[in-house]
Every structure is written in structure tokens, then in C-alpha cells.
Length: 173
Image 1 (cartoon, rainbow, N blue to C red):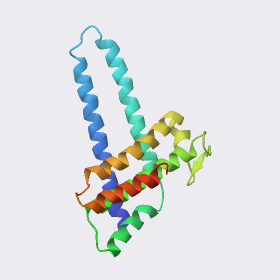
Image 2 (image 1 turned 45 degrees about the horizontal axis):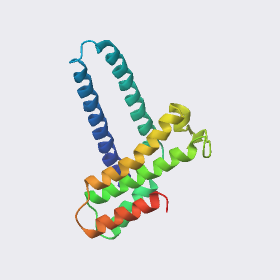
Image 3 (image 1 turned 45 degrees about the vertical axis):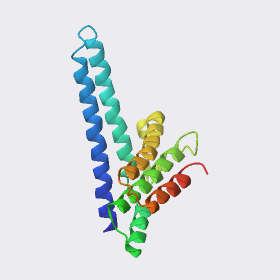
Image 4 (image 1 turned 60 degrees about the vertical axis):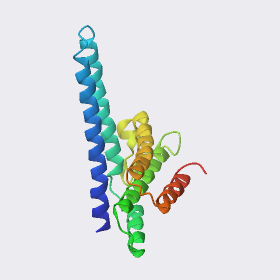
């Protein structure tokens, strides 16, 4: 039950990201129609840009929605239930924890770290999408984790403290 609730919440965030990136692409493309002398060059550039954005999003999803137990977010939700504190803010924390964990796995598998070819029986992100895309996907997931948290933070001091603790343990400390 926790896993299904969490995965639905995670997919909503990814769908929102895809929509906003798509809207940004369409806006950029509409701006091109105002520039007649450079139109062909820019169409070619932004066509390539769109495929890179799509590949990047595929890379994010590839690692985020891979086979796994979702142990960490389920633990967050189970703890909240035990404390009788289930709410949408808790789903945001569970989502952020999974995004941070996934970022750490992507970066850990990179050639400059452990140089792993497989994770959970599947090719690692950098083997499928290349090292640069995998690095950016990991970076994006770490940043997105705190975007998810900040968009759902309540003004309660405990919410801010929990976010601070998560950031301390997700980074260098």
C-alpha cells in the first residue's frame, strides 16, 4: 500500500517536470519564429535540444523507476503512520528520500567512482545514456528532491528542521 501511494506521488512529480520542460521548449521554439535570418540554424539547434531533453528525462526515469523495494520511502511512510502523522508533506519527504537515494546510486556507478556496469541486473544509467547524461541526471535528482520538499513545506518548525537534517545527511557533512 505504501509503495503504490509513494510511486503515484513520484510519477506526479515526474509528469509535472516533463510538462514544464515541454512548455519551456515550446516557448523557446515560438521565439524562433520571430527571427527570420537565423531561423534554419535555430530550428536545427532546438530540434537537437528537444531530443537531448527527452533523453535526459528518459535517463531520470530509467533510474528512478527501476526495479526496487522502495525501502526508504516506505520506511518514511511507516514511521509517519506509527507517529500518526500521514499527510501530503510526508509523501514529499518520502519522494525526496527516494530521489536522493537514486542520485547517490547513479553517481556511485559512474566510472570515476565504482565504475559498475549493472545495478539490480540492469545496465547502469551511464552505460545506457552515457557518463555526462548520468552525471546530470544524478545532479538533477538531488536538486529536485529539495524542490519537492520546498514546494510542500509547511511553516511548522519541524518541517524546516527535517529538511535541514535531510540536506545535511544527503551532502557533505
